[in-house]
Length: 136
Image 1 (cartoon, rainbow, N blue to C red):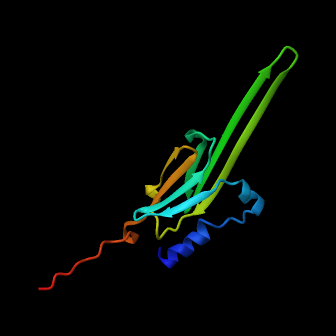
Image 2 (cartoon, rainbow, N blue to C red; image 1 turned 120 degrees about the vertical axis):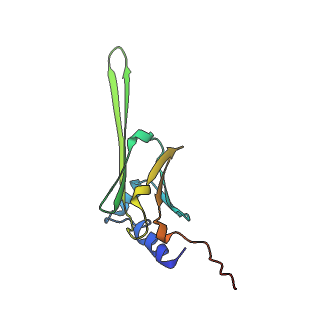
Image 3 (tube, rainbow, N blue to C red; image 1 turned 90 degrees about the horizontal axis):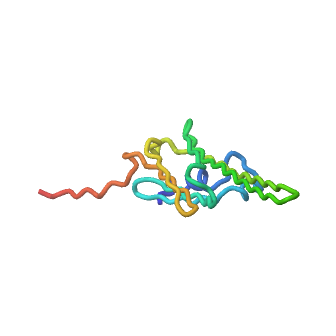
């Protein structure tokens, strides 16, 4: 990976940006970032959610991933009714480098507790195959 991109990842994807405190970071899902020739893949560890629980939006170069889940339990007996409600949610925001990524290519899928978000690179920053010059 080029040093500039490595610094970009360290500053954007791996830091708790927007001044999140350490306690809040401990409650956020872990995020892995991989670079491919065509783009970047974010893997968000978010077990216990359904794909409809997620909301991904991009505004002014900032991608926000959020999810909310609600669980209700009710037990009835002769003399009592017990109801339990459990709500879980999170949101993470990432500044997208406008000179590197193409926001129109963002797509997401959710499988086995992992939300995978693909962010495509702009054509001009994708690696190009070496050009062979024929000597005449």
